[in-house]
Image (cartoon, one colour):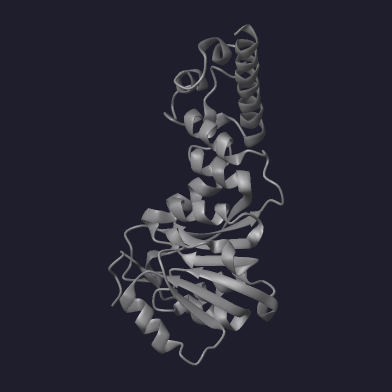
Length: 263
């Protein structure tokens, strides 16, 4: 039942309880949890014991009907038959966000979480271990890339624990891990969209230097003037990348201003 979207359903009770506890460390005092992809409701059961209200977002029609029947006596559960990638996660107020994420859409789901701004308090997700390592990687790590920078721009990430394949039905072909995100009160830069476009350019070809990656987007003399031009982006933290972005953006603004004056 309900494997239309490639789900692997977590069935290990102790792991389910650990995820619920990580998402709701304050227990019943937790006001609201938004669960992404509740599937057959295994994690939902644990979250309902630890939160005053749970909003579960499920795209699979068969699973929605199953959940509605299974939890018909739980007034504190709202089941949304929606695609989470089209769901405004900020619409329900400050919330903890949790879920067993389909491996192939982890990155787009994180985009939705970060787009929710200050309306999320914590996120706890079960994903493919390789993805968790990329999300939480720091500079200098082989796993560090654009996804790591995006995540660290908005939050402080950490892996909580690994989950074996045998904890799922059916077992996936890969190992999994649970990671936590705690949002920053204020992102490291103001214009996050512009900075992330810059960061994406920096990691366009990960093994190449900043000079090679940025020449397609910036003037050659501006790129060559960077002390870090010969460095790979994977060696630089957010503060260093932000400083380079500000330097390049400042040159663009100055050049544009001079062009206006000369005209």
